[in-house]
Image (cartoon, rainbow, N blue to C red; front, top):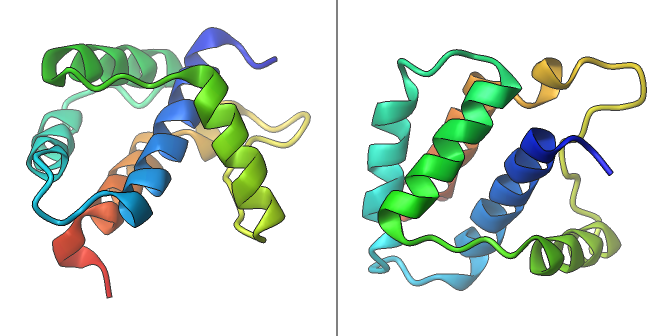
Length: 115
């Protein structure tokens, strides 16, 4: 099991990917995600700081991320051939779970940015 902060980032990324395919374009989540992107800019680019920011943002906007559900969703995504970014053994988590990747994932998930 990865450290708590890495698990939170992974769960958040899974939540965003799932929302991309299951939530309608008029869901208020998408407006919240625009604010997520904006407020992410000054956050220090370290997994611990990013996880704290995600946790704070989720609390502020009432976003509940159930780790067990996210684990099941990841398993289903993998079965469907989707690639979920994860640090490989020996790789620094900051190479995978970084601010640029989080920002890009959120940006691409927003309905107005989907093809």
